[in-house]
Length: 490
Image 1 (cartoon, rainbow, N blue to C red):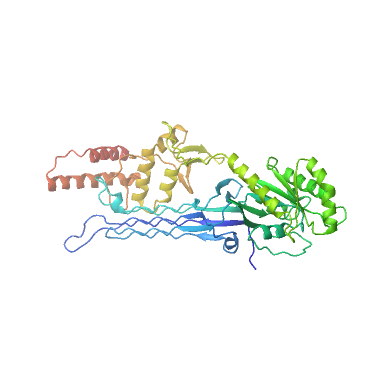
Image 2: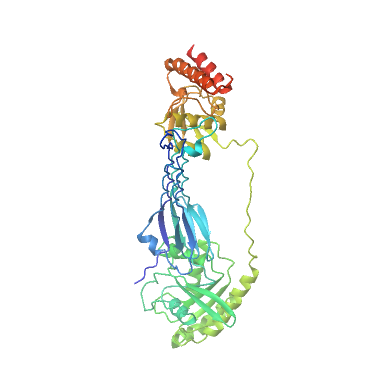
């Protein structure tokens, strides 16, 4: 037996980006042919798309953990890694996507509507992409960015033009089975139907959908029974039809009291006061039911309701009822505002927007928040000094160090970027973009006692290059760096 599920919690994990490759091209008689590390592939994303063949969230109930494919890592010989395959999840029409705290992320209405719920991580760049005129052979590569990981709540709200509301065993399922092709399970249950039923009704040149909304009993709007689970299926209905059992044998029940009870629940739920109503007095094929319908009809008409005597068993009065439904649905569609075309809103950044902010945490740490600095930290290999120096250059060019100094940060203060914490030391040569040294090292991260020898090595290397290439001794970057090293050594 098919189970109807209209609310699930999904645990989404987009694919991680592949790591870049740090490689040097080597061949016979050419041991140092330059960097040739390829880029990592992007991780796969997780998207939701409305499919008309899907009517329930049952599949996600049994498989709530969803993970997209990771990107492949780069390789030598400039071979880029492959991108992870995107994962597309098919959901019913009318699915509402919410975050764990109840914030609505998307309302998926209309076949083909797509929402990217979790974005895959970017692939890391290989050292071939990181090379430039100053850093000719980087000894590092970027790590892949982790993909989005989040929990979302999917709630299904039936997209129907007409909603049938009423007490259990009022005949809603029987009524929808005879005016449409829907075939719900029908019996004389002492409880309410456990799943909403949806059917398509055709009247002349009008076509509309009708939903049987179960679970409405006294106290449903406050959470009693299954009311809250199914009241959301009424929200999208343009017309509401009260299906009243005129042949009930329960003591204390009569059509007027039933309608008053259901109206009270709808009012308490909210947002349905302006929806047009019809009243279907069902089961008039029973003699006592027809007599009771004749008695209560004047009172219902005095309240402004359009009343129809119907029988789902003999199909008496159903033609008039369906024509009235089609008329109200047509009026609602005409009154609805026209659908506006999708517009792309471009919001330029402010002139003084640096792309990051600096806040002070309760523990005294300076917290840097921003898409770029947090991504750069995630993509840095911290056991490679050259990669750390490259990160320092990028943060300095972005203005993080200047803003930290203006915020009152002192050397040795705790700075937090993403999930990393640092004891802040102002970068001595930040902004130079490259400090000469052995591959995988950076002289800025050496001890002060070692910097004098580093300056000597730099001067000797520079002199050899001048003698070999016959260039004038006017390397501005090297000269400035040598002066800075000498000053620091003193």
